[in-house]
Length: 159
Figure: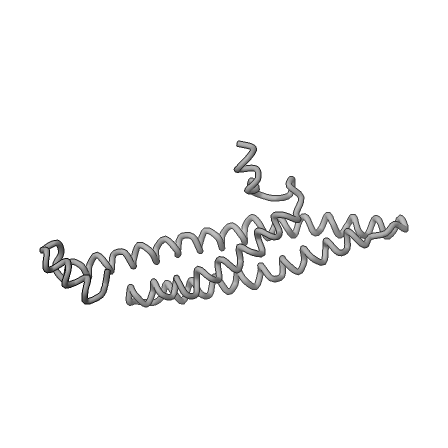
């Protein structure tokens, strides 16, 4: 939309002037940046206020189970391995939410619409996707009753 041949085509058929075309392009960039910003802020909020606290609570219960089993002389191999896996994902998610916050803040501070949209596309969206991978993995491990929102399965099959 924002190239010389598009400008010539729109002007030739008197659809939009170059100024009008540039304005529309800038509006689309602003809309894109605003949408990704909203998604990133929502993801950050959900991870910090719902997912991380839920996982911490679940790992506390799991750690207590491990300690109780050890006290009883039972094997804790499965529970300990699960606890380690969840802790690793939690640690990774915590780092990734901080990265997403930093990238979103940087992108939000960019003044030029094209550069801001590029920052949201090249930095914020990938950081959000990386964070989501950890949260999706945690969703498959953490007990359904401990997970703070409906799972994908719940939304697809239980509604």
